[in-house]
Amino acid sequence: MPKTKFQEFIYGVIMTFFMVIAMELYNAGLRAREFTYSAFPTALWEMRIMFPVCFVMGFFFIDRLVPKIAFKIAVPGKDHPVLVTTVRACITVCCMCPIMSFWATLIFKHPGINFIPVWLQTFVCNFPMALCWQLFFCGPFVRFIFRHLFPSAKA
Image 1: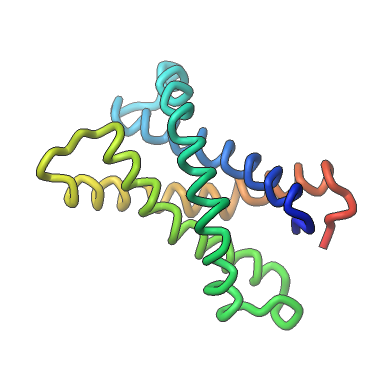
Image 2: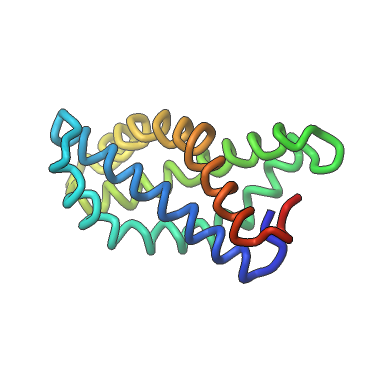
């Protein structure tokens, strides 16, 4: 959808914001064993660290890799646009979730010698939420916002 580097940057900022806030709220709820309004200050506090990490990882690394993988599975112009978008979103989550779980484990969980098991548990707990959030809520919502900010970017 983004057609210029500036549009890619804006799209990345919006997508990162909504993915990170949702995942931080989700993780705050997991740690507290319930989701209440008390999760918001924790999520916002952690977001100040995770937002830049997520944006850098996504914008500078993963966004270069994902199309190479996704477009081997679903080809733009050949396959239905919904399939192309869905495959790209799934591949993005498959790449970003283990990376962001790594950083969350490293920064917030202090696992010591149990780093790998704690990271894997974090990844396994976060993956279903990240995938569903991206496919059904965040992705469509961010594309809606983006189309209204940049009407000329409609594909």
